Image 1 (cartoon, rainbow, N blue to C red):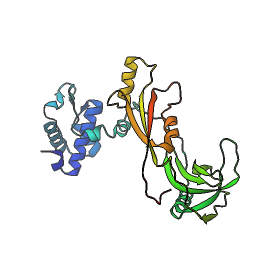
Image 2: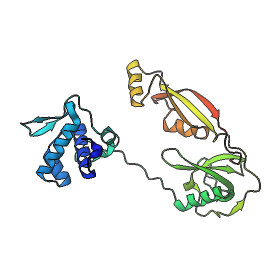
Image 3: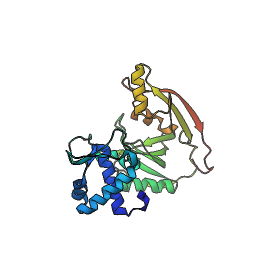
Image 4: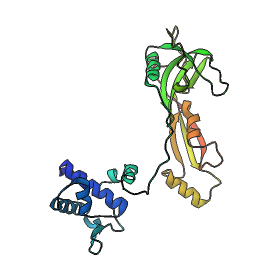
Length: 271
């Protein structure tokens, strides 16, 4: 028998058992009956199938507690389900052992994004009133959207500023609804966006002021394969990488060893 040969409902029940054993260390037939509404006989068949699949690592029955208990060498039979969606599993445990800091809502107006996307597709400039967080200025200006990017918490629009003569990142929510949103076709091709077409290969390591034990813990936390961790992003997004990973703060656990910039070769029509 293998999980692939089971019908979907029974496979779901075995995944549930696997998650129960992995995260709570115990399970019994009643868990299946309460969760799926199956009969005692069906729950017994499911347990038999699970124990056979687990093999020598199978949980052992505790006659006193009347539950199956995982062994010290427990390994999930469906690691992708038991480990891959661990937050949902913990949330569904029915206990107060897990909580999460709420995310602040950062709204993105789909109509605004659609308008900017159409402008990028049609090679147009759009007149907007963009509120500067530095000066408060919101003088109307023309921008030519080209791309969209996410820094992990919000969407940015990459656009060429006809006012400043350079590519800049704009937060759509800072474009005021009172903008004219007038569009016009671009008379000339936009300049090459070198920062977008350059890959930043960033090498990171645990911060040098950490102890040997602390550094080892940081490597485990960030899944290092060796002494350093290499990540890639676009040069245009390096600023957001520094901010998201707190590389510019004293309490950061990671520090930048170096960065290699590699220019790519886009299509000739790509700005």
